[in-house]
Image (cartoon, rainbow, N blue to C red; front, side, top):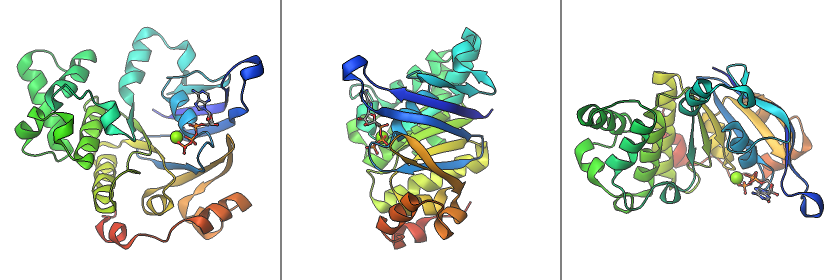
Length: 267
Ligand SMILES: Nc1ncnc2c1ncn2[C@@H]1O[C@H](COP(=O)(O)OP(=O)(O)OP(=O)(O)O)[C@@H](O)[C@H]1O
Ligand SMILES: [Mg+2]
């Protein structure tokens, strides 16, 4: 169930309007159970890699494959399976959630679209199950809410519920906790880590937040100007950064947050 990008490159625009390569020859992999981080300055190509991994944009060169099958050569059935197995959780939940729909309707829509359950009662049961998994209890109360009637952390939990409902093996999280207060952030990170342990979900966790990486990550990819400049296990990266750029990045990072440190439950 491994998700891979092999030597992918992407340039936006064409001819005279073409920019520099947003992503340049990137190779990376994420498997179930991983907590793989991607770090790097703004504009380094992190989100572009994420969009290619999700099949939202196609690379100009190289290929993305899931379970060894390139996205470009998947059958309809394989593509459907891919769309359930690889989910995303993005930064801004208010933009990702329809403001006019209740949490129940938002979740039910995904359930029906993917045929995860059929019939009113079964769909309702699945909605409750998803809300319980992300600790939005009592589930009945949260199911009735509209997105604006939730806190930022609760909205992020709804997004996670919407991803988890499809029983994914990989979740791509692009700055999923960056906008949250530190204690709320710790709660969401603990939830993600619990889902990793209990459901063997693997994360590609994109963030500029190095204290978070230091807490949660396994492997870390460091990106700069579209390229991966370093790929190493977290401990090695922090103890002995292999590139000058990583050293600068670590030196510029804030110190570990004591609130995060206390709230984090080791997995
Ligand atoms: N749709 C697009 N059209 C044109 N250029 C784009 C598009 N999307 C991204 N880019 C450019 O590609 C480069 C990489 O952008 P990307 O969003 O991948 O960076 P990022 O690492 O996610 O940055 P951030 O940390 O700010 O989210 C940037 O120079 C950006 O301006
Ligand atoms: Mg981005």
